[in-house]
Length: 276
Image (cartoon, rainbow, N blue to C red; front, side, top):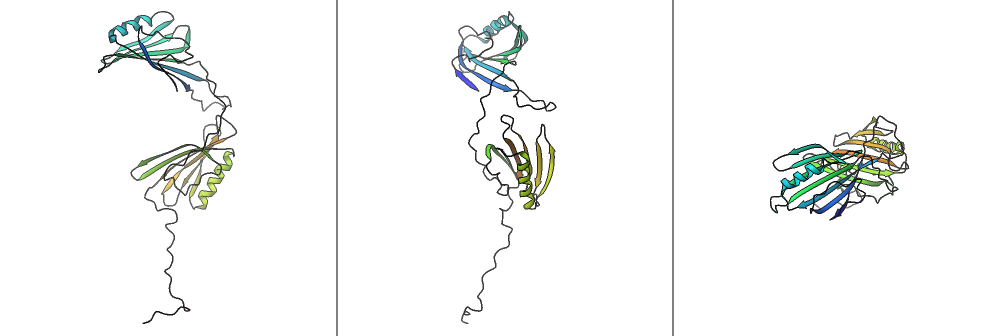
């Protein structure tokens, strides 16, 4: 999101009616990524993005005056009102641009309690816009989440792009995403061998949307379980994007704690016995 204090955002496809003498507090411009259809073939071309513009204005005029202004201004060419509603604390208009069906918007009007100013939130969405993304650059790798299980190795040369954990009574959930230039089969084979070497149960989790694949894993004592999913990275097909989601019992013993303790040294035959 790009913000612009005290001014309108650049690139407005059409300027909605602005209440006379109102102050522009802040505005913003934000691309909205479209949802890819998993039933359609995936391509290297990113989906077009809509753009959402938000304007926050303030005026000392009464809320009723502002309502009357927009009821008239939004019902004149090139705008038309689609909905008008009033509640105890908020008025709402939804409107569209007559000659461009891709442009819709809304105005919300509220009266402040403390400063007695009327606040307007104007949103304008251009569904037909297309924002060109800059070329992808590999970011610096993030750190693993705190307390990430040592039993689950990080793939060699991985660049961590997302890392999170959620702690609840009796359970910790970890989510890690990383990028690698290796193929997804290489990554999944690596984790399959690592987990099987620990004596864990590993099963194929099936194919995901597109060409993605997944394996599920579980340790013998049910202390750790989760999945590893891998697919081509949408923004740059030279990379594979891998996502590890696992839950762990926080009370499990640290790795190696189940090894038998070393025997207490005893005096050998070559050493003199203690005097009686």
